Image (cartoon, rainbow, N blue to C red; front, side):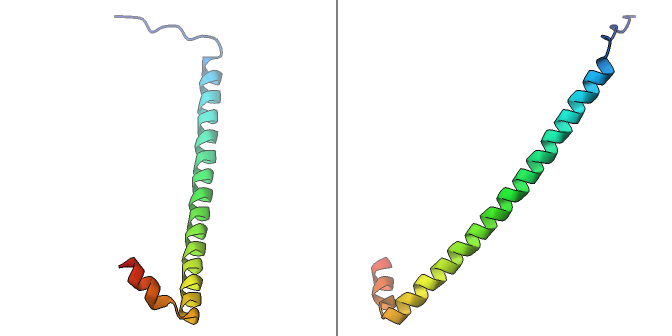
Length: 72
């Protein structure tokens, strides 16, 4: 049978440090993903509100029908 390769001194601490670093990266990535998702949702809400306001202004200006006709 093959004998297991001897571990380098401090191998456990190096592995632990690498695992901790990867865990930290994962946590930061998840936080960044959550922040970006939230900001995109806010932007979508703002765009929808802007569309509504533009449509309302077009109705007030009496140009809604002509714009609809141009789009079809």
